[in-house]
Image (cartoon, rainbow, N blue to C red; front, side, top):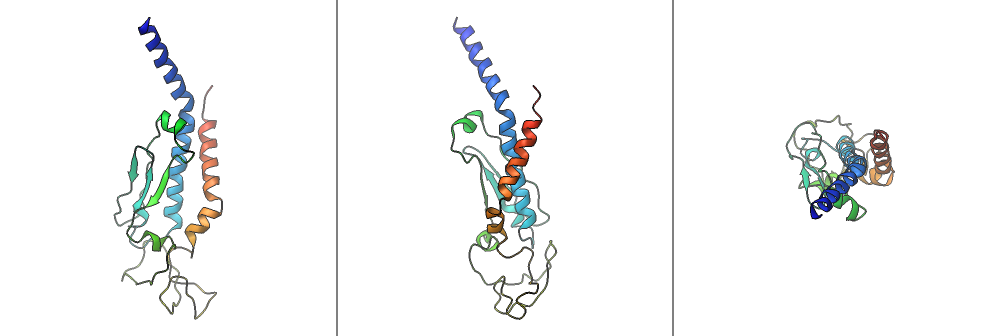
Length: 179
C-alpha cells in the first residue's frame, strides 16, 4: 500500500512539474532577455561592465565573467517547482557586480576619466567641460562622449521595457504548450 502511495505522489509531482514547466521556462527566458537588453543599452568601453551582470534565484546564481570583450549572453538558473510556487513574487534578482556599476548605471555622480582607448560600442563625441557624464556646457543639445544615453538605466526600468519583455517571453513559452 505504501508503495502505491509513493508511486502516486511521484506521479502527482511529475504532472505538477510538467504543468508548471512553461511558466518556469518563460520566467527564465524573460530574465535572460532583460539582461541582454541591459547589455545592449548600457555603456560598453572594455566590456567588463556588460559582462558583470548576474541572475539569481533563491538557491542558484548565474554570473557573467566580468571579462573584457563583447557582451556574452547569460543563462538564467532554472527555478525549482517549489521556488516557483512558494517563494516571493519576484522570482529572479538581476544585478551588476562590476566595481563601478553604480557609476555606469548613472546612480551616482562621478567624474569621468577617459581610459585611453576607444570603446567596444560606438560612442558619440562632444566636448565635456566638468568631466561629469552628461555635462554639455559648451553645446547642451549636442552629442557627448558616451556609449549609453544619460540615465539609460532608470529610463529602462521606468519605461515599461521589463514588463514588455516578461510578457513577450511568457506568451511565447505558453504558446509552445501542446495539449
